[in-house]
Image (cartoon, rainbow, N blue to C red):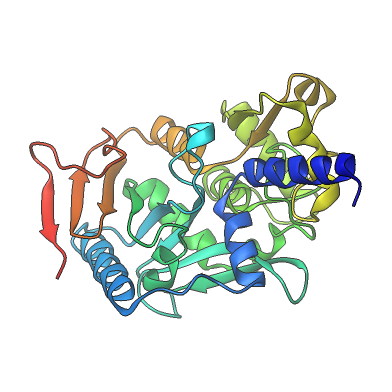
Length: 304
C-alpha cells in the first residue's frame, strides 16, 4: 500500500473513532461485531449494579424514569453519557425495562427495543467502571410520557427510516436514539396528533421551547471526512454553517436532561456509578466525580 494512502487511512480510522458521538453508535458497533468478553466477576458486579439501579427506581415512587448510561468514552467531547431511553415500571417485557432506539444490524435500520436493566447497563466499553443517571419527573410530565411511550403507534410513527449516530437534532432525514426520545417528549407534552410530518412538528415544538442540542466542536476538519467510511455517521443533514464551523448539533443525554429540568423544575435526579469495588449513589443534580469517589451524603455500597 502506498505510504500516503496508508497515512490517510490511519487518519480516517482515528477520526472515525472520535466522531462516534453516541452509545447508539457504540451499541451498534458492538452488536454488529464480536463484543468484548467479560469475566465472571465483571458480569457479576455489573448485575449487582443493575440491581441497585432497579432498587433506586422501585423506591422512587415513580412509574417512569429517563435513564441514561455511559458507554463509549466521550471525554474528548466533555460528555459522560451517550445513550438514553425510557424505563417503565409497567413495561410488558419486564418491570423497568428500557424502551429505546437501537440500530438493527441485520435489517440495517433503526428499531425500537425493550431491554432489561441488566442488559442496558452492560452496554459499556469499560467493564470496570460505569455511570447511570435517572430522572424522576413530576406526575404531570411523567404520566403524559408514560401514556405515549406505551402507545406503540406513537413510538413507531416517530421512528425514522434511516439511522445516523450524529443525526442533526432538527432534521428528519436521520435519527439517533436520543433524538427519538426528544421527539417522544415533544409528542407527549405538546399532545401532538399523529399523522404526516409528526417528526417535523415535534422538532418545531422543541425549538419553540428552546431545546438546545449538544454542540460537538470537532476541532479538526478531517473528522468530517469519516462519513465516507461508515454508513452509521453522516453530515449531509447538518447545516452548512455548522459544518463550516466544525460543529455538529446532536441530541444527547446531557441536552435532554437540561431540557427536562427546564420544563419540569421539580424533576429529581439520581446518579449511580460503579468501580471494581463499590457503587456510589447520589441524589441531586450535582454530578458524581469522574473517578466515582463518594462525597458527604452519598450512599456507598460495597461490591461483593
